[in-house]
Image (cartoon, rainbow, N blue to C red; front, side):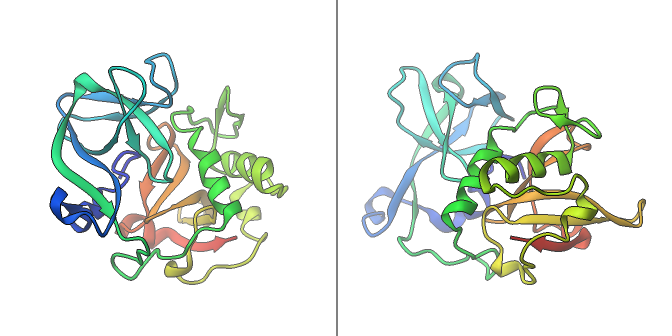
Length: 236
């Protein structure tokens, strides 16, 4: 349910032996971490950490021009980087059909250019500390602060400060299968008795949010009972 399980739910459908991959778009080679490691924003351990991968996690690896590093395919199609000595490249290609539809009938909406830009920009905040009421990513940020920041910067939409207010802005999306990257998600808080949490949909069932539970900006899979039971609205 984290950032480099990027294609984990797809792997069974898209991993093919090399000899059967000609009719597909090759996304990369299947790899697996050999020890706990980190996925970085750039091929240096001094760059932003996208994710701390446990041992034996499957990744989609791509060649890198930087010696000693692999690129790692992320959920939004961008690349992270992992040290080559922490992963094993397996003899399988990960492929995708040129015109892939949803794997399970859900989350199949094609992202707009602006929606993809929103999702791409949101990724840079992975690992930012969670801070209730926080507006400044350099000091910590909360869920609605993250959404307001991203949407204002990329979509040029000046959203209200709280999730309960933000839900009143934008085009309602009423079906899961119509969700696109960049759509805003809103979740009910039984403790507050109102909408109390928000995030940004990334595609393939994943979303990004400033999570008090994770203690930072992180990604989660929307299609769990936990999140679906709380999801009450989506806006574009």
